[in-house]
Length: 271
Ligand code: ARG
Image (cartoon, rainbow, N blue to C red; front, side, top):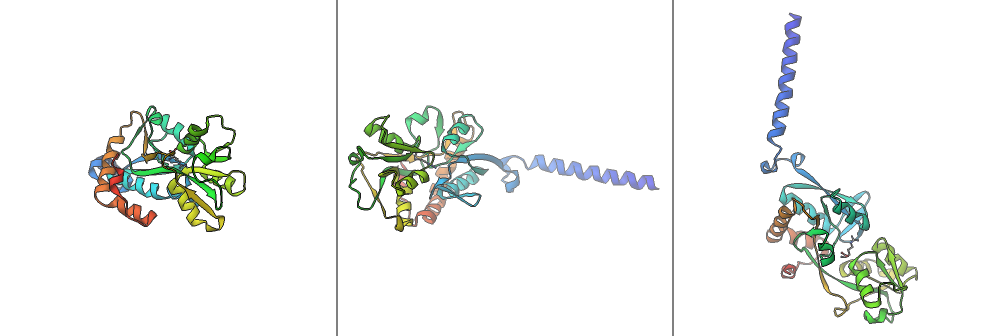
């Protein structure tokens, strides 16, 4: 009698186990569009010192890029796991395929295209100059002989190098843009060159610092941000489709409005 009961219990247990196993394989593929648990996770790396695109809030990365990338990943049937690793490391991690993509207000340019694959463009940007109120710097040419703080290996750093030479001793390079702005505030630099949205938001949100933003469209070109993938990425095509989709269906505009309080000019995204 006891033996039969034990046998039954073992059988029931085995049956339950088998059922669990088969259910898992059935719901695995992304076509089933099941719960978040069975979506394919992608590892996204970023430099979260670049508000309003990406910044740390406690131990969470928040910003326009975060909402955008999450929406794109969801549309494409993936789940994004976003991790702050810093600017220089993020390029290495994507190149070595330790990450599936980089998300960091990254400008699409020819040099980077040699090593990486970019998504379709999702944001229009240009470099501008952040200076203290009353500064005599009124254009990019006025930066000559001044100490300019930039984030290392950004298009802002490149633009200043293009104007005044690579070994310009008056340029101070920092690991992130917040450090460059701190250098300006402490008087160690006369100006910061960085993406317009970042320094415009900074000046607006920190009125006590008395900083103003100078535009010089002759010196600084228009740039587009893209998500950055390893060269032979298998997910890039899915992400491109998803970006187009969320631009069409209004999700992009919703996210844009949440962060920038105005409607996006979607025509500007067409290269
Ligand atoms: N758009 C510029 C570039 O690609 C600066 C981006 C910096 N992004 C950041 N998260 N720190 O070079």
